[in-house]
Image 1 (cartoon, one colour):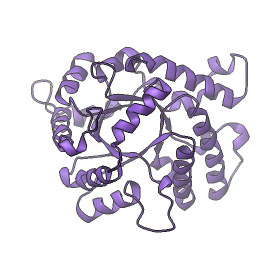
Image 2 (cartoon, rainbow, N blue to C red):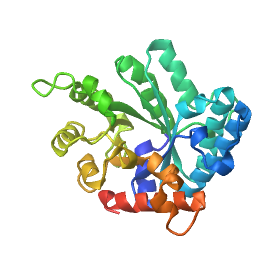
Image 3 (tube, rainbow, N blue to C red):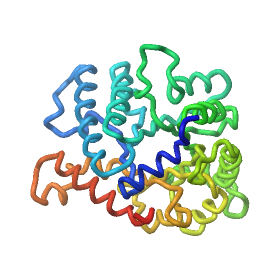
Image 4 (tube, helix red, strand yellow):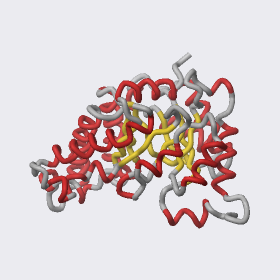
Amino acid sequence: MPQNFQDRLAAAIQRCRTPAVVGIDPVYESLPPALRREQPTVRQAADQVHAFCRTLIDIAAAHAPAVKLNSAFFEALYEHGVATYYRLVRHAHARGLLVIGDIKRGDIGSTARLYARGHLAAPPFADVDADCIPDAVTLAGYLGEGAVRPFVEAAAAGGRGVYVLVRPSDPGADEIHGFGGPAGRAFYQHMAELVARWGGGAALVGQCGLSCVGAVVAPKDAASTSALRNTMPVTPWLVPGYGAQGAGVEACRPCFLPGGRGAIINASRSVIYAFSRPELAARGSQDWEACVDRACAAFAADVAPLAGC
């Protein structure tokens, strides 16, 4: 039986001594000037995105246990971008990183099963390298358990994981996720209870006491975050919102279970585009790679105490 994903993640966090996850969301127009050209072909753009992201992965491997690749940023480059996504998953694995595919799929029936086959399950074809498949993916569970169950089954069978959206970081999402509150029970509370139930089976829980079925939960305020944490005692969290979206270490603290377990913190733009921040570029180097490396190291060190590292 494959090792539970959360057991693998817990070991990686202890090895790297931080719960940091570097989110890789590449936009061609935002790449360092040396990697851009005017009016590129889509293949040229995908090649430069690939070069940029390989370097990001190499940097992240020195500081963090995992990276998160957002598939939308690769799909925008058509077939070349999709191929780049899978190549980068393979490269991250080669560098010893765990990989979260930020795909946010959420359909039912045969569609969900095929999404799970393409993004999480072991490849059924002899000529597809299993290392191009992420260790975990993000999901939207708003069509119910049928949209999540095929991924849970694939995760359980292959030692992989899922993170279901419960409370996104974008303030605009509050009009949906906060529906029913504050007088009533908010929608995100209902989603939290569902995710806890979907991942509560003994066969899904690893030796670390956490399920392979996790939740994406952004910290909004300490009281509501703590209440959600109590609702999901064996549910691991993927926590967005750190850095560019304004959440700091103190906001993330209630996301963790006692002993610093049960959460990983994602930072994307504040790390991968650090070269565009004057205060970092001014600290001794105009080299974009050095700027990203400094930002990644600072992020990893900043959140390390949250996990008791």
